[in-house]
Structures are given as structure tokens and as C-alpha cells.
Length: 334
Length: 262
Image (cartoon, rainbow over all chains, first blue to last red; front, side):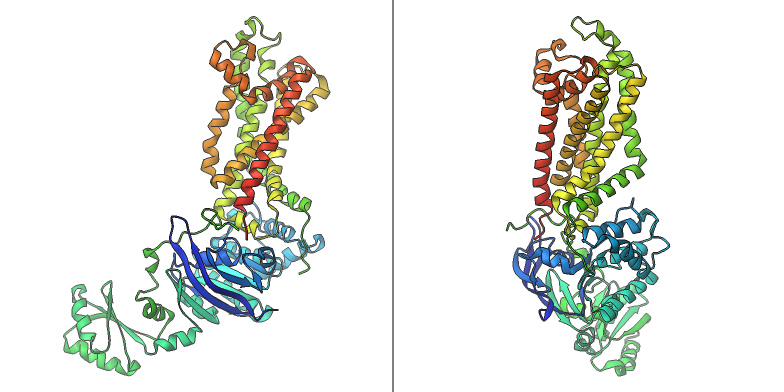
């Protein structure tokens, strides 16, 4: 068995007449690790997953999954991976059980084991009661859980989850997080998880790669990434919207304030101890504030520090050419 | 997990089962393609009866002459249903889910057409029963009726191949539906309404003569109104087989490109 579950080197995907969706990605993921691929919509997350799961050939660069080359050993790659791609692709006319039996057949499970495996997975994802209902009657959370079960039918060693909790309520999201953690912890499954939720990457991932405009801008454990940022930040909202500029000036003595949507954020190099000093500075400038919030360093701060933008809203700047149909146009010939 | 590769037959069976289940659970996909040709048959059968008085028209009722048409129209509906189903899978990402399994492209194509095949069989039986119930005799007898079912199913299979080809090339259901009127035009520009020798407008006569759809209709029609006409059957089966081979061949190539996993 190779040392690393997933290795990518200089991975590039350029769409014809489109953007360079992935622009030279290098990464490696160890066996049993949960790797969080964090970035806004359009950053290149899904395109990377499509390449690593063999659905889309890279324009240049190399990658291997479980030691198999994604370009030349696609079939072997597909036997060791499971994938739940963006938007649970399910047939609304079929039932959950029918999906699992179809998947089990196509994955080559022996006839005798298919029903047993379907039952086992339905139980595991809590869909036993809904097993014989059509998907059209499933909630978003149920669809995602079935999607996960489908990815696990053939017992893969590596799991790709592309934004598995997007659009889910908190309860469904937490349930899915627990199951993904359990898969890695108890079954040793390697998980490559893309997300645009900071708390998801923070809660689940052993390591996080932050991707922006097709490039990895930071990569480490969430703790180390946050520690790199070091000190906490304070977010101040003035009572009067037009006082934001004045506020910014008052906070300049602490660092370089960032002003966005009437809110001014500044990092406190001296930590929480500087909070009293900051309040005095606001008082001295006769500034009335509507709210003042102290933030311990988060992955959002890391994103802000590495890209100069907040993760929320960064998606609006550059839509990814999502290869929902496998990106058939403009693919590289072999 | 003890997974091994499923045989091609098992893969085709699994996809065909899904396709059949899908079709039968969406009753609209069965009922409307079944009703529309029958309504047209009823209207034409009664309204165009005067055509039988044209010198040279076969000595049968217009209903008997027109009974071949529902089989063709049904085949066109089957083509659209098969194409739209596949296109929807591509649009929703279900196709990608299938592409991540060891499923062979050919098995997916044939399985996908399995539903079309079953619908075509059901339709053909219904058209035949309604035709006979409305007083049309089958000149070639019970054996001919079976051959008629086989020919009409082969025709539907060929057209369904065209539907899947469009779906695979364009990847969306709208494209498949946009092609539907073209299929219908090809039907109207054939010997659908009159025997070719009675079409007096020169350009229409030429188009109908070069239009393969004429020979498909004439093959089906010969079994209803003539009996065993070797030439009409040979042309009918020949063009139907050619249509099936060409459309499935082109679909296979399109599938290879669409499912071009690394």
C-alpha cells in the first residue's frame, strides 16, 4: 500500500472558453485522514474532485489515488473510491432501497449480499423506515444520507464528499458530521471533503487546504492555521453607518482595520488584554457603537489573511464552471 | 466487501429494470403516447374515408390503411421518452453516479433502451387490439400480427436509439424535445396518408420515395392490408434494422465520448 491515499502535483484544469478552474494544485492526504478542502463557490473544489474521481481528465499535472494514476488507471481508482458529488444525484422516481440495490449490482456485489448490504447501510444512515419511499418524498438531509450510503456500498477505502451538507439544517448537518467522523475513526476511511463552511472544516478535518481562484493558499491543521493568525480580532459596528470611516481611523493604532458593510474589523496584536484599551480609544473619539464582538482566530480569519477577503461573499466574484455533466466539452484527449 | 465485476448482462438487466420501473411509475409517459396516436387514428379513419374512392387506392377501408400510422407515431414517442430520460440523468448528475461504477457504456445504453423496448411492445399490442376491435382485419393472419409486433418494436428501438443519440450529444432534455417535431415531419413527408403511387405532387412523391419512413410504414401496412408481401417486408425490416444499427452505433460512439472516464 502506498504511503499516501491521495497525491496531486501541479494539477491544472483549463476549460475551453472558460476559466482556469484549477491552477496548479499540490496536495497529499494520508490514509485515515479527513482532509477538508475549503473555499468559496467557484474556487475550484468540485473540479478538483471531478479530476481525482476520474470523471474529468486534468489539463496538466499528475495525481494518484490509492497509488493508482488517475489518468491511466481510472478503473482501479474507481474500485477503491466512493463519491457523493455536489447535489445528491438521485432518481426521484425510485426508492432508497432501489437505489442501493442498483448501486450494489453495478458495483458487482454478489447477489446474496446485495439485500443484506442495502439493509445494513439503510440502518446505518437511519433510513430504514423510509427505505421503500420514493426519493421525491425525501428531505434534503435524507437525500444526503442516502447519497453517503450509496458511496459506501462497495466498501471503499477513500471517500470523496463534495459539499455534503450544503443546504442542510443544523441537525442534519451535525448527524452527517458524526457519521463522517465515525467512518474515519472506526473504519479507517480516508475522507476528502470539500466545503464552504468554516465550522464544517474546523469540526471535521484533520487538515485543511484553503483554495481560492484554483490555487491552494494555505494548508495545515485547523489549529496551526489559526495559531498562525495568532491574536484575536474585534468587530465593531458603529451606531451611525457614516461613522465607519471615523471608526477605522480610531482603530488604526491597533493594526490595519478592514472595513466592510459598515463593520470595521481589526486584529488585536496584544490579545484580549487590549480590549479595554480599544474601548477607551472609542470613548476618546466619542464614537458610539451598536455592537462590539471579540473573535478568537477562526478559519475565516485565516481566509481573510491569505486572500484579503472574507469567505462569505467571496463566491460572488468568480463562478466555477461546474462540470455537472462531467465537463465533457474541452476535455483532453488521451 | 467481496465486490467483483458484474457481467454485462447483469448490468444491462439492472439498468433496464430501472428504466422500466421509471416508465411504469410515470403513467403520463405511458398514457399520452398511447392515446394521441389512437385519437389521430380515430379522426383520420373516419374523416379521410373518401380517399378510398381515389382510383388505384387499395381495396380496403381507410381505417385499415391508416392503422400502420399509430405504430410509427408510438415509436416516435418512445424515442423522445428514451432520450429525455437519459438527458435528465446527465443533467442531474445521476449519469456521473453511474460513471463511477464499473458500468460499461454499452450496457448503460442497452439497459436504458430496455424501458423503451417494453413500452414499444405494450403500445404495439394496444394499437393492434384497438385496430382489430374497430373492425380492421389483419390480412396476414395471426402469424402476421406477431410479425407486425416484431417489426413495430424494431422500428421503435431504432427511433429510441436516435433519441438517446441526441441526449448524449447535447446532454439536455430540451434538445431531445426540440428534435421531436423533426421526427414528426419525417412521418408526414412519407406515404403515411396515401399510397406513394397516388401522391401526384412531384416533389412530395420524390421526398416520400426517398424517405425511409415510407418503407417502414409500408412494411407494417402490408401485413394489415395485403397479407405476406415479401418485398414490402424486406424493405420494412431492412430499413428498420439499418435504422437500429446506425442509431445504436452512433449512440455507442456518443456514449463513449460522454462517459469518457480516465
